[in-house]
Length: 126
Image 1: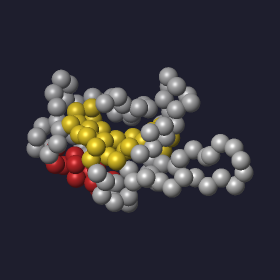
Image 2: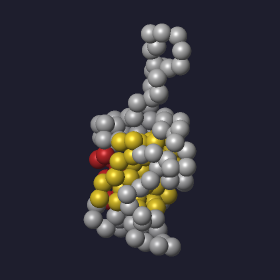
Image 3: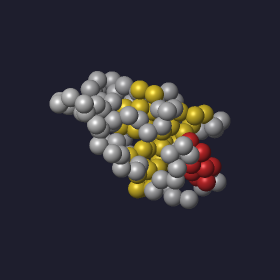
């Protein structure tokens, strides 16, 4: 899974989840023209510019959990997906099996304002 934007943590991604967001109603335009860009699904998501493509609208949020960081990423070009990354100082390794449920619990806590979301893909699954 490619990582979008610039993470504050330079640790590698050791686990990730792609969540399917509920469909949104089409934007209402009062005047003819291009509809406004979609709004991020969570209030905590902040703009996270992509240095190689300034036209991309990527939003992210990071929370430090001590030994690892959970990063939520939402791309306005793909508004139906929300990605969660677990970044940790495990170079050449994956997230230890004991930490996978903690990572999933943190993601559930962060997406609670939206509600439960279906998982499109994940690595690893609990």
